[in-house]
Amino acid sequence: MASFKTLDDINVSGKAVLLRVDFNVPMQDGHVADATRIERSLPTIVELAEAGARVVVASHMGRPGGRRIRDLSLEPVARELTARLKGRPVIFAEDCIGPVPQQAVATMTDGDILVLENLRFHAGEESNDMEFASSLARLADIYVDDAFSAAHRAHASVEAVTHILPSAAGRLMQAELESLDAALGNPKRPVAAVIGGAKVSSKLNLLGNLVEKTEVLAIGGGMANTFLHAIGIDVGTSLCEHEMAGHARTLLDKAKAAECKVVLPTDALVEAELAAGAEVKVVPIKRVPKDRMILDVGPKTAEDICRQIESCHTLIWNGPLGCFEVPPFDTGTNTVARKVAELTRAGGLFSVAGGGDTLAALAHAGVSDDFSYLSTAGGAFLEWLKGKPLPGVAALERAAADFPG
Ligand code: 3PG
Ligand code: MG
Image 1 (cartoon, helix red, strand yellow):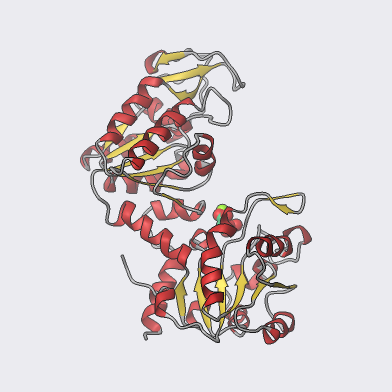
Image 2: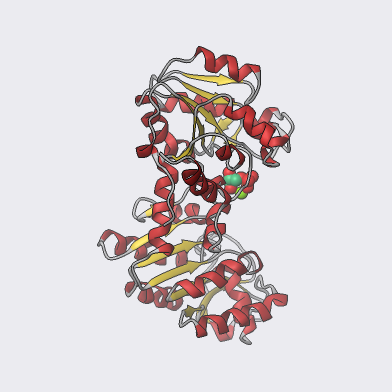
């Protein structure tokens, strides 16, 4: 793994630290609906505060496009953070640059925490503007990045700022990078990937990278239908990207050349429409009725995938295998997820999951606590699976060389 600084390499006592987190959390009626990302950055915030830093917390929320949008204020998030920090005072600044946060920082004492207003209220954030980054940097002596889930964005608070301030990774960023390295960078082999979700088109590069890096690639979800169609199987009225058949065949050839075993569904749960409590109809994959759609992998397929995973030491999971939100089409995902949980608990498997719907599907299967590592990242996890350097990570590596010592 390339090298970047961590909190072990910097002295923050008596310093102001600009801490980039990803508090882009789901909101409902003005309240934080899921505080996972806040919780996962708490260790970094507390460690910095306890080490005597003045902690200036910065994040984006939503996509306001450079305008101030009331519903995308980070004030409710600051309140949630206060509740979770149990007694540590948190101040909120109604802007992220200029006199308002500057005055707030001036009143802070060591160990205090300040939350800045949404970075994306200024267009300079997303355009990676140096002047905007300088205004942010003026608030602090050191920069710490704990926002792996925003590391795929070359934005000012992620990239440009690392050219100005000495920079290090926070504990969450560090944990994400170490886990992902153990899963794909430098894994214990054999490695299996379980990839689901709706569309092949959105995951083409990712699948191309995985066939080179894994021994087993199990494909489920809507995207499996495109592969089935590509090898001449009639998928009825299933979601299917017919125009992607050529790409799917190329990927299968690439997998063969790389000696990656691709596991496609051999049976499926089918229905005329997606409805809860539907009577389960299992059909062999070559007998999908013309007027039915595939809504989950069948029991034989789930068993095949489980058997393949049993012989692996590392597993990467992204995307559900079926329409897990509507039982019984959660059966395939639940079966495989519980197998991964069991193997992980037994100590033989290192398992990592992330991206999009994945964590919701695993929570639904009741296995959230049993995977080795759950990434907080959506888009960044998918970008990372493609095998390309993420701008935010590259920035930390470059900064470690620019600011040695
Ligand atoms: C995310 O939730 O994926 C990150 O916070 C990045 O948000 P973005 O997709 O709006 O850049
Ligand atoms: Mg996103």
